Length: 128
Image (tube, rainbow, N blue to C red; front, side, top):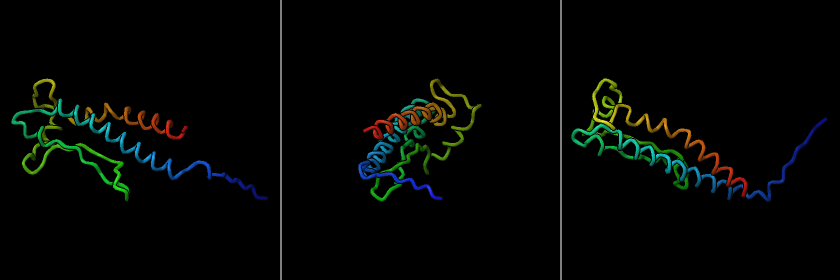
């Protein structure tokens, strides 16, 4: 005995939905990573300004059409090799509002926002 289930997808326009979802994910990740970066710029300790100036958003290419699905914030470069120490040293004094964990704190604060935005924006796409 066989049970066969068939779904007619001809009217779902899955290729268009896929493009819409990819664009939404790209936009949503960018929206949230820009928020994380802006918040980290407020929290990053400033002595000479080099550490703050070294902060940047890096977008990762994840598809053949050049759209990215990932992005991250980074601090430190060849001239600023102390970014990790400043970030991790909880005993180092800082002037408010700067602090250790200047990147981790805004990232953790925005995780739920990213998840909720993806969920709500995906629902809009799938409902259309």
